[in-house]
Length: 165
Image (cartoon, rainbow, N blue to C red):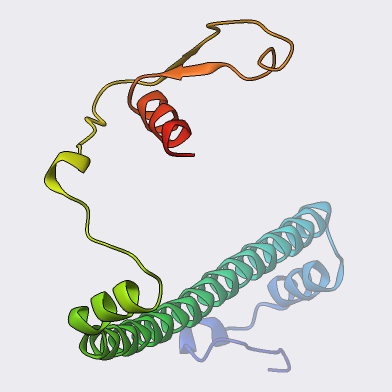
């Protein structure tokens, strides 16, 4: 019994010289089918590697996006806290300014140093600013060709300013 056995079963340990010879010949000789299978296996491996690489790249890009989003969220929260602190500081400064303003002192300075007086009731008039503004040309003289007269609330304001000048 000088044959090679790859199976441990005792049924195959019979004396069959032609069976072992054929099997050893077929293992040593490459066939076309095995070449095709090797090519197909290689292509499957390449496809798997390409798919794994694609998945890894996509995962990397996704993680990178989440990191950038986290950084931006941190920046936003720090800017919000900075905004809130500046707003609180502005409110404190405005409260300090409001406390420092004394209306009686302002009135005394205006009347004594600048000669201002309070207006009488007949000198005060209110302007209705809800009407729309428009411009029309009233008179075309050499001086007023480029200056249209305004109508509406702003026109009344301009006209009243011209009266007091």
